[in-house]
Length: 271
View 1: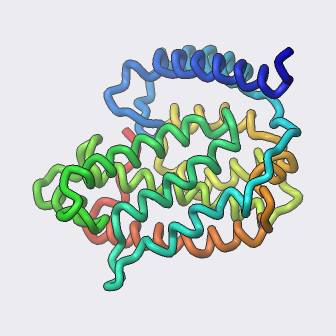
View 2: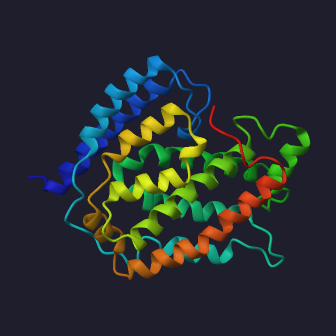
């Protein structure tokens, strides 16, 4: 007989497929890909409510009690990766920065359905920047070089530009940092409270009505806080690693904002 955890895995795979199908239906009318750039449209609201309610509901299983303990915490890879983000001259390196962002995706995974749209947007922006880097690793070795090239070519404000991708990737990571700061500083808050407060402080001001509504629906499916913390702790000191993550990663994000502001690209809003 199949173990309960195996059945759960199979069911989640099926429901994830259903979610992708429904999400594609909801967003198929938008030319801009990604959670952060959804076009507000009243007709989409009914699709959003029905499709998301169904799929989010199916996905909202409790986290498994059978936790495979890892060495260190879920933050261990990203903390190690941050040591290599800066070159000797202090410039931000493209590949190491994107690698750190990739290491954070498994952390976001632990939130389940509540963060599915955020994870999709982050993954899409990482892929966009990575594709540009791989097109010429020497020319785009430094993270800001691709932005400067687009500013010079007057393509930086395009919805599919790397400048746009870096901006929204940085904003999404601002949200993640704020969320874990809340979990560290407010032990009495529920996961939903921590997520909602972090969203209000970071992404909300840049989102349109539909994106904000989507987030509100998703946050209703935030996992149980205690189970979530048990899952991400692994075999390490999770509170210490959260503090290290927030204090180390936040300055990189702030540097991104300062650079984007210097070229007039830090105040773009979702369409």
